[in-house]
Length: 87
Image (cartoon, rainbow, N blue to C red; front, side, top):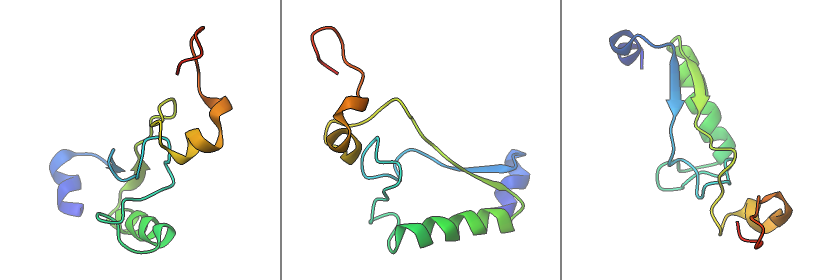
């Protein structure tokens, strides 16, 4: 990471789209790319980023959620709908 930081001139390392199981479930991790306890995995990644003099960041799209996501199933009232009731 430190070599990358010097090459691109940024002090932020962002975990980009694709880490979560579904859009909307921002606190979930795909097991294939992030095996182990999700909290420990992300803490370890953030600690490694910090140890290389960078700030950890996390990609989010707070107004987007997949139809099959946990957040849509748990909170259907959070979904913006048109006049016909469609998301």
